[in-house]
Length: 477
Image 1 (tube, rainbow, N blue to C red):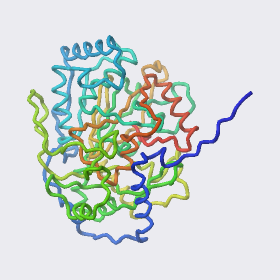
Image 2: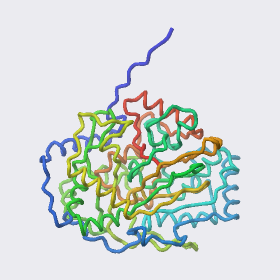
Image 3: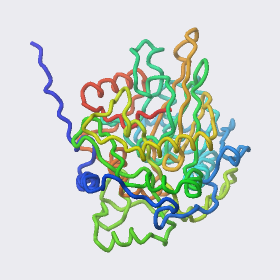
Image 4: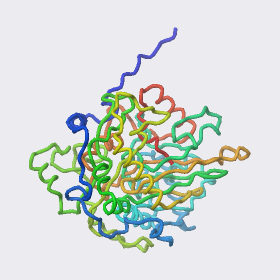
């Protein structure tokens, strides 16, 4: 006798932690109360925002980005022996994936270099490459353990990337491996426009194999550089990007969309803006019992991470320069797929369309990213660690040689990370999306899928079981 599962009825509780119910309702009210056409000043940045940002290492373009190896760690032979020793300990003690961290994956020599690179990712260039893992010498399980170990030096808190609790996402072209054509950017070889991934602090990618024929490179653009350009030439666009009326698709959940800005500014420590002070005086809900402004990862409503403006100096010798001094920060969170729809997720008619002003702002933002970006192609055994809040990235189309075994076709693994000591203050308007990644969900456990084909099947099961599938991270490398 066969049975039929009851239809799944999604609710906001499956998409957002319930602690954020109040913010979700406020988002809906903000949109309802906005005038049809916002009247932005044409020649000034928003009140309290800098014009321009002062010089810092976060501001770079293709002409000023370092040409040396100051943003690259090449793993040495002795350091590789450290990795092998840590890996053996993990295996001998049967340490689970969730408990692989800086303590259990100790790297006496490489670790301090990774620590210095972590500081640079948070308060320097915002990007770091780590090269030199001989992936072909390790099993799939061992490569995942190495990824967890090295990445823990950038952030020990790992965010979920799907509603089923997946902490690892495999990225490859499904068609070349015998699967049906798949429109999700994770499983196709199409180009991707500039974006931030789902609201995570640090984006980590590990390349097990680059494209076997051509393509698959990524370009990176500094949001601080783009901001300064807009402040000088198009300050009205800053107003558009910072307005709270951008409608983000929730992919079939209830409500069908929420609204927030794309661009945020956090002043230097001790120089909070008047608007934030007024909000505090009114006693607005800050999301934590002690009135702090950033929820702690995985435990919303708890005390926040410490300030990121006073960073400890590294005592180890490293090519990474000292972190940027105290400055205000521009943050962005932009996924064009959630704003304009895509082939895999067409935009429902019940969600407000983007205004002409918003469409123009996105077009200009994309062109500036292309103008100022650097391009890099990950090699086999390489990592990239990216400050996802201030560096945008894209992907070129890629192609694999059908004559080469599929095991050597392009395959990356992605993780979302947060460093609780160095993490930037999360703007309140981002808590809804941030909570989807780092918040707690009843009955959802951490999942660590080592096998890429199983990960693909899990993703497909989510797309059919759930109306939305929760694929907030489909913008992929």
